[in-house]
Every structure is written in C-alpha cells, then in structure tokens.
Length: 322
Image (cartoon, rainbow, N blue to C red; front, side, top):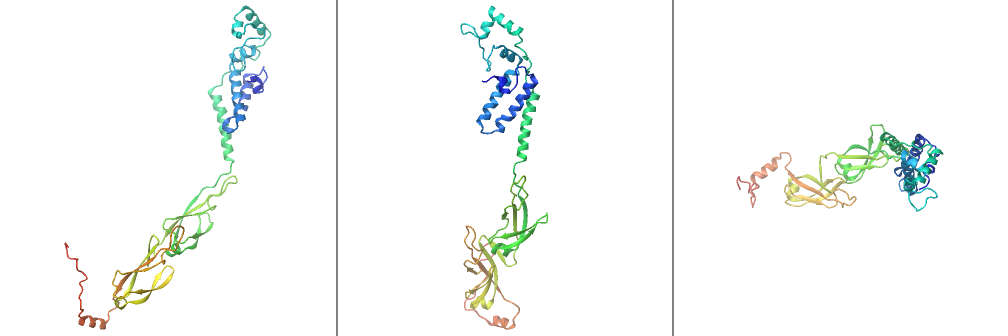
C-alpha cells in the first residue's frame, strides 16, 4: 500500500480532524454503492479505508511515523538493522533504545496521537450522507407516471360488434375509447400514455379502463355464442315458415321447420360474437317460443271440433313421484 498520508492527500502533520475530513470525502467519492461495477473505485475505497484505519489510531500512527511498522501495519526493522529482525526486536536492544530516543528528540512523532477512532455517530453521519446523495440522485432520474384506473359502461351490442365511446376523466380530459369486437364483461382495456404524468422527463403511465356491459332486452351471451328467445305463431310452428331472426349484426332470414314446438332451436352459424384475437366467430341460437296470439273465434271453433288422429299428452311423465 502507498504512504497512507499520500493516499488520503494530507500532510504528516495533519490533525485528526483533517484526516477524518479527507477520509470522508474520498470514501463518499469512491464508495462501491455509488460506483456499481467500477473496480477502480472499489480499489480506491479499500485503499483510503486502510489508510484511515492506520492514521486514525493514535498508537499505530505514532509507530508508523517512527518507522516501526509499514503502511500495512506490519513490523519492520529500521534502516541499518542487522540480522533481519523486526523493529520491535531491534528497539528492545540498547542501540534500539538509543535510536528511539533520537527519533523522539527530533520530533519524529509530531502529529502522532491526533488520529482518534471513529465514533458510531461519525460513521452514521458519513454513510447517512452517502445514502442521502443516492436518494437525491434517484429523485432526479426519469420516472414513469402511475397507471390510472377507470370504469366505462357500454351497451351490449357495442361490446359484441365493437364501437368507439367517449370517456370524460375527473380532470376534464376526454378519451375516445375503442371497444374491440368481442369485449367481455370486466375486461380491462389499456390506453398507453394516458395515465399520470411522468417525472423528470419520464414517460406517462397508462389508463386502465374496466368495461361493464349492460344487459340487452333480446340477446344473451355465452362465450362466443349469442342466445335469443324467438316467438313464433301457431301456423309458423305447425306448418313451417321463412322468418326474419334478429342478430347483433341485423336481421337474418331462417326457416322454421314444420311441426316445431316451444324449445326448438335454430342455429345460425357464424352469427354470434365476431372472430377476435384467438377466438373464432360464435354461433347464434334462437330458441322458439310458440305464441297463440290474441283470442280468435274461428280458432276456438276449430279446436272444439278438432279430433287429432294421435292425441298427445304434453304433461306425460310429470306425475308426482315418477
């Protein structure tokens, strides 16, 4: 390790306060948390930490100044010592004591004892300031705005076949929301960049719009299929007929088979929810409901005299306990 005084950039006569200030400045500058991935900064931080550890200890600093230990705190012999022994071995001899007295009389220990150990308060202050700087740095970085959540009620047919509807936000902004075909109850649509404003040049957040679909007076939805209860007259049910069936896309002609009864289903392929995303187009199911209609004297007379060849019991099998 280099001379600890040079590492910290202070003179040999520096006071304990000078050493502490120098270390704090360099430690903050080169701390790994503030220089992630920077090997050079990490090495410098280790060097200034080791230099401070030696110079902030009064006894170690005095021994270093007298030449008894090196910058790593290891024992060393003074210049001219014989036999390769340590400075401590030499100092315990007579010549060593004389050598030590000469150093002391020459004032080689000037400034020794001024380092002082770091208190918990000092360390807290140092690293607290470092973290505060990091917090301030983060506060100036670009930040994305927050996502904002809204709800939008749409008509049944808008959700099935698609539409564009306007949504007024609490802050007065107006969004034109495109409802894709096949949108379902509770689905969330994302409008990118329409949420909260970003900070420090960051992108705006998104608007997340939860869709609520109103009920329809005719249609019901099951997955991709559309269901309808379709009234038919007695002649249409008995004799069969071509009729117009309502669908979300408009009226479609379909044939009622002869001898249809209530509950008969007509299937219109591909007339349900349009294809979207991974979903194929659904079907449209019209369940027939036979309607007698207003009272008709001729029908009543006919029924009084009508004798069917094969009388049917519509309640067969409904006896209690069967």
